[in-house]
Figure 1 (cartoon, one colour):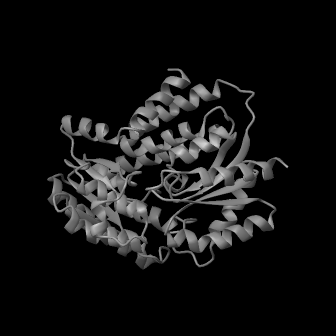
Figure 2 (figure 1 turned 30 degrees about the vertical axis):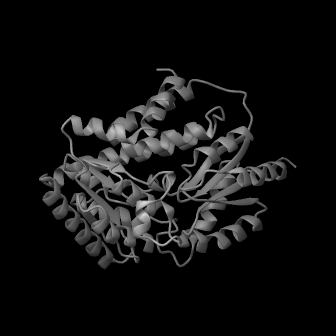
Figure 3 (figure 1 turned 180 degrees about the vertical axis):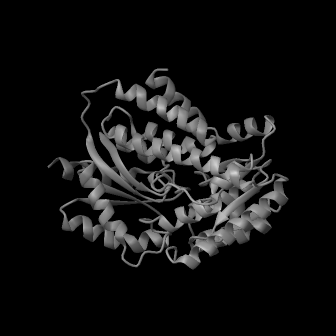
Length: 373
């Protein structure tokens, strides 16, 4: 296929998750919703179930206001809104990790707001490195497995988990390579780039890997004379079509990212181990450089500077999800580290209810002038 045809496939999938869900259900498969940020999808996949990501949607919050105050992450609010308005009907369960206060609230509120879809908690330890943390994580996985078996009737087998881990590691590798390839292809817009990453949540990973590898092949066979302003993005979620369109209109190219819904998902592979559960526990222990993962040294801020330099980014765009405390706490340190290296930083605050990005447009136009000076 040609590049344009592959990109159109990504767009169709990214823009129609409900249609994807219905297609899986009609094919006789059971769908399990996967809440952010690091839910053990490999377990769900290994049980013959379809893990489908939900990072909320850009919608007006009405029903969910019964359960949340205004000053809480709009991602979790919109997930409950979608559950209450029937968007997720047909799903067999939702798995929610416990890595921030908002996610903990999401899980508890879900039980009452959307009782038709069972809530399955995945409880992670903040201290990931000690040996006892591995036992704690495996206990959490076993809880998820038990609840999934009850909710879906599917059965868990560790050998099948090992096969799913291999599939997910292959997908991680493809996405990491994609990041490198896209850095050399500024003709791929920020909107198209978002479609590629977003669609991964609505496909079986083996199918997404195949499509990503096809795109990599077509891009590596082509060249371009397009020149854009190279930037790095950071944040929890950058799935903001209006904001991304403004980036494209102003000639920005995202050459690297530190985004929870994007590259952070693919940095760490599950290593070989005696059992699949041991492998997944070791993976979580090795994960780092994320605002929702405890790190007293805050190594993430230096990683952002290093990655920006590696990919030739002229500046860093921080897309801050409103009321996201972990990201807000990291931002001053990130800004200080970037400014120390003469790397300009722009903070744009977003909300899943936003409809007007004109203030962001003005800020980005000023950022453009700064980077071109």
